[in-house]
Length: 193
Image 1 (tube, one colour):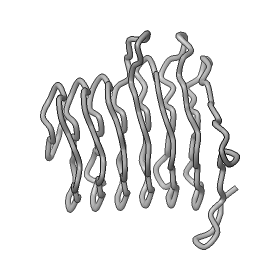
Image 2 (cartoon, rainbow, N blue to C red):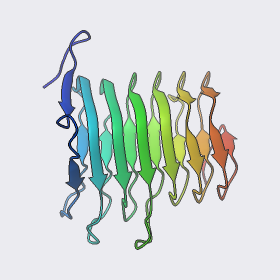
Image 3 (spheres, rainbow, N blue to C red):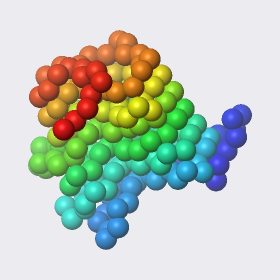
């Protein structure tokens, strides 16, 4: 259920316990957390999303649909998202992403994960991201509606494409480390193809 501006609905791990959601293959596309157009004022805090199932296809760890807003995702670890999927995918305004680790591969898996984060929308905060080993960009902010976003205090490295590919206007990029990626450190006005 939705919360309100003063009282977010919170889904959180129990204090001190590790909660791991292991994605399993389904015939339909699915996500660990999937936010719809009417979702507002929700906080997800303290989960691990593990895409170890080798049969999955196009299952993002977290998906947001345009018009979902005021969502906070924090203290999340995402690993081994496979087969043409993203760690975090979607559109939405006024989201907060804080302290998220996205690892496209581990010692055993070869990843087909596309972007660590593939997001379109305005007024979003990406704070304390650690993203590495994605097949394409570590983070891609796309479309004409990717305005007034902030990326800060983050480390983006060892991705196949750019560390950050960004479209839109008035975006703030501050206090980040972007290194050892297959493409540019930062692509401004990024238009693939």
